[in-house]
Image (cartoon, rainbow over all chains, first blue to last red; front, side, top):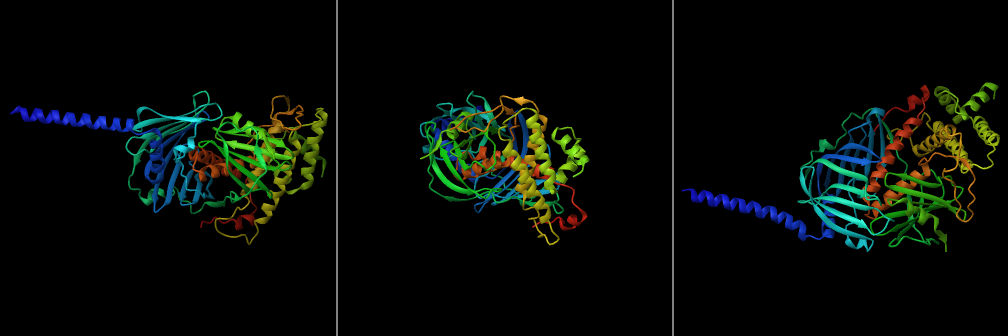
Amino acid sequence: MRRPAATALVALLSLAAQFACSATAASERVEPNEWLSRMSVAVQQTSYEGTVIRMRDGKAEALKVVHTVADGVIREKVVAQEGDGLEIIRNGNEVHCILPDRKSVLVEEWSDQSTLFSTLPSSEVRFGSEYDVAIVREERVAGRRAILVAIRPHDEYRYGHRIWLDLETAFPLQTQLIGTDGSPIEQVKFADISLNKTIDPAMLAPSVDIASFRWIDQPTRHVSHKIDSDWQAQQLPRGFRPVATHGEKLPGSDEITTHIVYSDGLANVSVFIASADDAGSAGASSVGGSNSYSAVIDGHRVTAVGEVPAMTVEQIATTMMLR
Amino acid sequence: MNEAIRTQISAFVDGELPDSEADLLLRRMSQDAELRRAAAEFLELGRAIRGETSVPGIEVLRARIAAALDHKAHAAEAVAPDAPSGKALRPLLGIAVAASVALVALFGLQLTPGVGTGGPVEENVADVAPDPGYTVPRQVDEQLRQYYLSHGASSSELGANGMNARLVTLRLSEETLVEEEDEEEPVTDEQATDETPAQP
């Protein structure tokens, strides 16, 4: 009489073992770039709710996040859990930044489709030969099984990335920007997350009554048009190439600024060229993992900005020349 | 301009004016070109006294302060009784921010009276002749802020590094709002009636 029970138990254990193995095997079979492609799809299509910890400049802050996509329209709400209680609510391209303690709402337009947690390029060709992409191991993040994918640069002109992807959905549960010394510069990690859950529209509404708040329009970020430019970098770090050139009229300036974007397929560096009498910072500056360097060349102020090491923006900025 | 004001400006430039008085003076400066010119003269005088023949970036900085304050004065005037209702009550936010950053930079100069050697310099690659000068605080000024924002938008449009670029943009947006708020001045009763909170 005990035999059927024993058989069932063995079968159950066998099934469980097979299931566990299949998940691991799945992660092993899939190429790293395939994981990144899946990730790109996941961040565009996945609805989620959770708590994100953002670490940068020696500080950590928690953000409550709700995100959903319906009919191609991104709706998102991010609420800072510390400090001023900043809330950012996105409905399509319109973004409201709410500061409850100041009773103000800053209104912005985000013309692109990226989200707060969209991450890296989707296509493996973007990585060129300047990075290695590898699956490192499986770990648990936010209570979920995740696969760690590492993007390692070949030289010190660019940062590396570590991305923990949900094993089931390929959604990025944790990302790190890795400096040239191998330590994280910036990190975004979900402490808890619910994936593909139905988002109640009420969850995307402001948490506070903003009826009496002041509304402030952020000036148009930029108006740009494609142009040909005689400017080019004489000593681009290996792998970087120009991918876009625009003329832009930035808020607060009447002149058209030339904006050239260089990319190695993963990291982007923008070079802005304005007249030298247009007031601006000189030398190096940084915001988190983003660096900038400004120099005056041939009567123009040349400023390079990018999520790359300081030496990269400096080299690009200081070697820009008119053809 | 009476002597008391000149003394106040002198103290302000030297970083010796109490915050409450400095705030008041800044408001007056925002409305009075003569006071701004006086402040500029004191800055120039301070340079001469300290034997600084060249202070990298100071001319640019001063021009920015003057321009930003001019714009701010115009912005204040622009809030007229027939100001549009709705959410666009503060169309010159960027300019207000420029003023804020410029003033922060000005205070920074006040707080760094020593002559530094390692400070950032305005570098002309073709003609590098860095003079010793102030250690100008490394602020992400308004123009640079716009560059970061534009870079973030471009990066996102290209589909690359969206997260990092966006987070930088987010942080800058936060700072924008905070700085704009910090720059806010008490409004007159007349202005207050024109700034009835509204939403779209």
